[in-house]
Length: 64
Image (cartoon, rainbow, N blue to C red; front, side):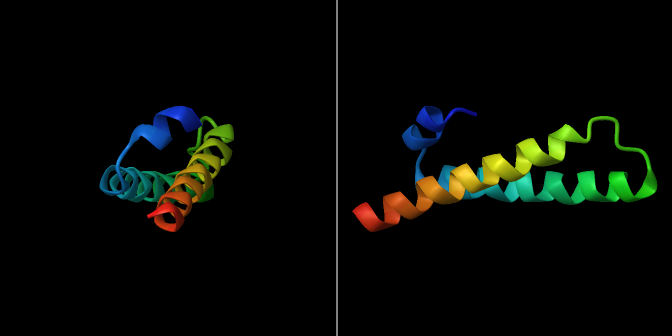
């Protein structure tokens, strides 16, 4: 997702998205350890998207 799309989401939506991504990250790590991971770059993408979400959530909390 783009940062612009994340800024338009509510805090609850962002929290739900972050939770889903963290779950996906866990599954990707399990796949990596078992040697079944097809796209290792996906781990990096998910990690960065979680960071973007946390940044947007922090700015929304400070602004409120």
